[in-house]
Length: 121
Image 1 (cartoon, rainbow, N blue to C red):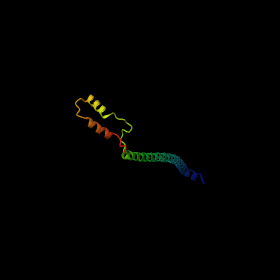
Image 2 (tube, rainbow, N blue to C red; image 1 turned 120 degrees about the vertical axis):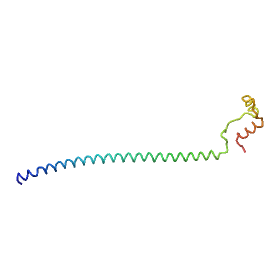
Image 3 (spheres, one colour; image 1 turned 45 degrees about the vertical axis):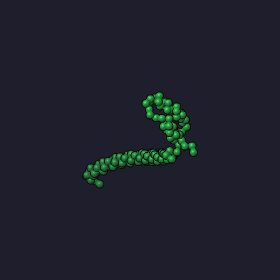
């Protein structure tokens, strides 16, 4: 090859070298972006796992709540289990002490106590 041919190929060679450098830079950038995508995908998988675990926990708690609600609604025992009420007359006296003009009578207080006490049949 002559020196003239070599001189005419010099700009082409420089252009090829420049393009090769740009390609290498693009390859490095692409590798970096692929690594970032892989990291984001890993974080997404972890986040989805946490969501799945929370969904399972929510379902378990909802099931437990439904079960307990069913137990409470089917229970025949009143809320005041284990509470010992005073005698009707004592309650009436306390009521009259707080509300002197109360129209409640001993029979009314006795009926209320019967309602509040659980059936022991």
